[in-house]
Image (cartoon, rainbow, N blue to C red; front, side, top):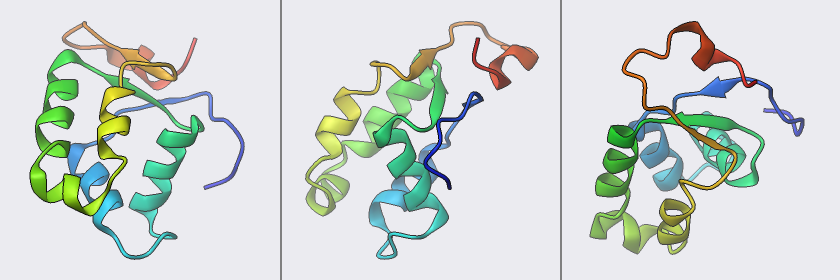
Length: 98
């Protein structure tokens, strides 16, 4: 993953976030995705349901013990560079930042 900011929006599965948190290899693809989300290099799209799922999974005690900054990450989820999508089917527009 490069250091440049992307102009596309991504939907990041909860499993990718968990794998990024628990990996022991900082250069793994899931760790790179997580780092890019935290650094603001990856713009991700959330629905209210996905945000609830992120919070439910990431705030589990097992993950909180592994990673001290999980709480900060979860609490920052609704801040830019996040887009909240309330449409049931965002279609092609979800793939590009406007």
